Length: 175
View 1 (spheres, rainbow, N blue to C red):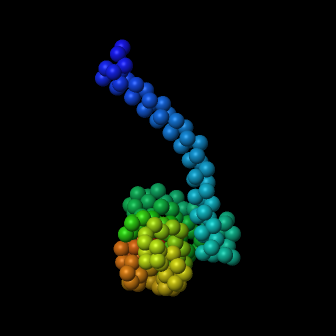
View 2: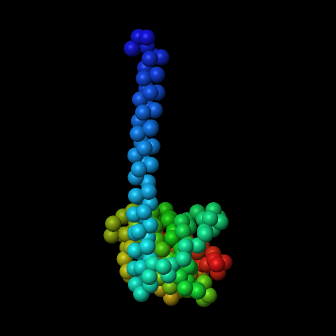
């Protein structure tokens, strides 16, 4: 077969792509469990930051398959004590979006705690959502009510507030 023929080049490209795909699959298979374990460790650390007097065993993972299917921003759900439901959410923002935990008292619809895990938006503007001032501004407020957004960072904070409002409707149904 002539090395410059289209058939040879197509076959060579297909074999090379197959080898590269196999190598990528293998690398992913090796690193995926480590990445998942590190993400779970970071999430548990965030839960303990929200509730420093708690132990990691105090947080019960809720089977949230149906919740996640119906509410795309929700990535996970925990119960803490009898009344607190903690939602892990990921929302888009101006640029990179925000991943956060919000704890809602299912009995009285108040925000018990808020913790931003990551934010990819503009440093100094959208990233204000990760600061304690924003979390403190939410504490004790009605989760289903009107919540303040961050001035100048509306595209970052509005999806966070909307997700909190959505979680408020879900919290009373979580068992």
